[in-house]
Image 1 (cartoon, helix red, strand yellow):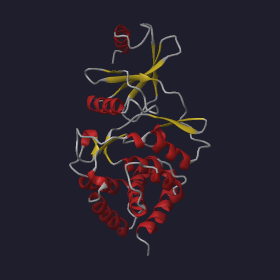
Image 2 (cartoon, one colour; image 1 turned 45 degrees about the horizontal axis):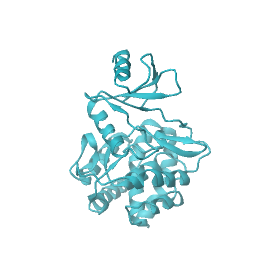
Image 3 (cartoon, one colour; image 1 turned 60 degrees about the vertical axis):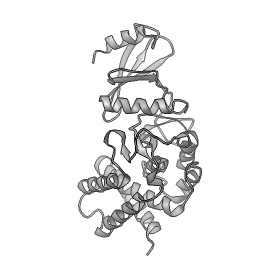
Length: 287
């Protein structure tokens, strides 16, 4: 990608204030290429490249929720959907000293409660791989987990429990509502300032219920995986009538998926997730 040409075009269109802005590559997400534009002033912009369908979906999300201060404010989308530009969000990705209960409550208050029903698409799943309902989405998730985690990590009864839960949850009222969600709402995409949540970056646009993003955030780190941690935030979701059993079931589904991600990318976290799995399994189906 000719970044020099892009910088000149952005200057010509008035997006940035200097044609001499410098592009500095950054370590980005798993699929995107990200760089920082500096123009000699205090202003800095993020220039983010990805596949056209991904860029289009991310721009759609940022435009839909442009009034949420915790999200990047989109200032430009390339007409060919090659890249987007937004102001650099200050903050650190270091969550040391934070408390998950507070972070989740802040996430609900500042982001999730602003989510809107999405009429342009129905179904469930990632925007670029949308399923007609939640059931086939969960079936794919279960199949993927089985392919990733090694034999013996879970018992046969565990898979049977998850399969039954997936069928039940797919028929729930939560699964019938289509909201436009962040989709990759984990700690790896959180920004913090003074040990408080201050920003949320890199959406992988998802169609589903806001509870999905909350559970995803809760399960994204192996610490504080207790009911006491997530219940206060769950009670604050405006578009959901709190139901403890439903929450327990959704968390177990979230942990099931997280077991695969941990096994594949963060194996040192696996013991903590397995311990949480056993505890939440009892909450869902007590002996």
